Structures are given as structure tokens and as C-alpha cells.
Image (tube, rainbow, N blue to C red; front, side, top):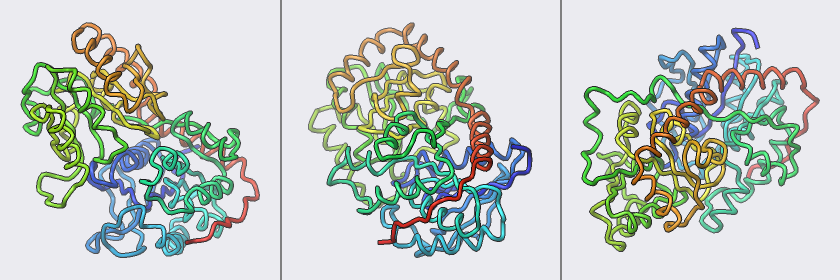
Length: 416
């Protein structure tokens, strides 16, 4: 695509301006922010549409990266758990339609299933090309979480409907393509473009004066895990592995900030697990860490461990590899693409603390092996996962979608 193409990114719950690490603020927020910035660097004009969750927010904000964030009124101007936003999506779609009339974008790229539904309504009304990135599919979430899945009951049906309506689906991992095929969506309609990593921010170069936000080391070895404090992240698996790794400590970064007094059941559960397993003195839940401090935190670890039950993509392994730190990750989802087993890191079965310990132990005992994995990981992330490359590849999909537009299909999934 040539320069100055007008792009609308729609991300109803994941604002690019949000602090990362909260309950509903994670990889999607980073993805949208970095994709928008990369598209701007590639010469495009980008507006990101997200739900207004604070009455004091300006309607339009322009971060230093040069894209515009537009706050769409839908539901209360206050934080709402994303799984409770579905009843507000009709209002979101109506306001989005009016805003897109004003912007007149050349393409609409929706992120997450609710954004996709609202964007499909707006795109059909305005005859605009529509692309969808789901980030996570309801069928996968239901499979792994079962009764604990709090998604609206008709999520899967809506996802299938919007997948059929979209001009193109942009999947972040090959595992998602297979899942979409199981739902009846042809792989010929799907392009795989991964998430990326900020290679200027996440580097292997250690700061002369490391951030004071990085806790002092208490053990010979440090394991680090980063992400939202939700059960599917599998932090309890790493805590279980610690019982077989007596010289290692574990830092878990994410969850509520240090000044947040809101009860956090997952925080309390993990503390209880550590106490029951008698490793509480080697487990520290340090809360949210500012993005500016994250490279120093990553570089302070001997291994970054990502142990979710499932993970649609997972940006943390890329950030760790960009910082020159080897990764041990669950063999699930997007990490099957990003972590090359025994080359750039190690893949292990999820929910298996014994297997995890059996992989981590030898790596901690071998600095040379860790260095080999770190070097290969750094080379891989630099060659394949820069946000400029991701943005360029995404823009190529926009061009493909615009050139192959069909008549589209009416979106029949009702609100409920």
C-alpha cells in the first residue's frame, strides 16, 4: 500500500493508552499500540477506536507515536470487565459508524470479537473493507476454561458470523488457523501475521544504572514470569516447579499496582499455593511494572518462564528474547511459533511442574547453554518480529483485502 492510507483500528476494551498488567490490559493493548505506531512510521494515517472508560478522557488523544486514539461512548464512562461489555456493543457500533463517516478510512481492522461485530456493522453500513484479528477465540477459551469461562454464551456463534463477513482474517499464529478451520472458516481467507516486539526498547544491552523497580536478587538463580494475574497463565505450575529447584527464586510481574487496595483473588491463591508448598520465601508477586522498567526486569532473570494452559500468542517470550534472555514456555498457542524448542528456548507440556523443573534445572546449571539459546533467540526476534516488519506485512494484507472485496454477507448474530 502507498503512503497516507487511512486506517481505522478498532479495539473496544484494549486501549493503547492503558497501563499494562491489569485484569483486562495485556498483549492486545501492546499489539494495537505498536501496530498503530508501526503503520504510522510506514507512512499511513491511523486512528484507534476504543471504548471510553473514564469521563475525564478527551474524545481524541494523539500520543507521541503519531496515531490518534478516539474514545467511543458506549456504556458507563468507567472501567467495565470486558466480558460484561457485550450489551453495550450495539451502542458502540452506532457511535463507531458516525465516527468512521467523519474519518472516512480506507480500511477497518477490528481487534477482538466484540470489536469485530461492531466493526462489521459499521463497515457494511459504510461499504468499507473489514479485517479481523481475534487475538483469542471463544472455542479455545471454552475448551481450556470450561465452566470458568465468563464469556457471553453466544461468543462463538458471533465469531463464526463475523469471520464469514470479514474480507480477511489476520491471525497471529498458525495454531489459530487450524482452530478457524475447525469452525468452518477456510484457511484461504486467513493471513498469518504475528505480533511483534519493540527492538529499540527491548535490547540485550544492560543499563549502567538498572531501574530501582527491579528487586534485589535473593537466590543464586532468578526465574521471571510476566502477565496478568489470571489462572490460565499457570503461575502455580512454576511455583510447583520451585520445590525441585532449591536455588531459584521466582518473580511474578503483573496484576494490581502497588497502591491498589482492591482484593485480588488470584494473587491470594498464588500466595497460598507458595505457602502450602513451602516455597513462599522464594516467590515474590511484585505487581505491575512500568513498561520503561520492563527491559531491566527481564535482563535481571536467568530464565523467563511462560507457563500458561493456553496462550493465543504471547508477547512476553519475544520481549525476553529481544533482551537476550532464554525462554522456557508451554507448548501451546502462539508460543509454538515464537519459541523454537532446543534452538531459541525450550517448550514444555502445560500444567506439569515436574516436567518444567526437569527442563529448567539443567539450564540453570549450564550458563553456556543459556547463552546459546539467548543468542539464537535474539537473532530470530530481530529477523522476524520487529514491529516495522509486522506493520508492513499487515499493510500488505490490507491491500490484498481491498483488492479482493466480495459482496459481503449480512451479519445475522443478534445481540443478547
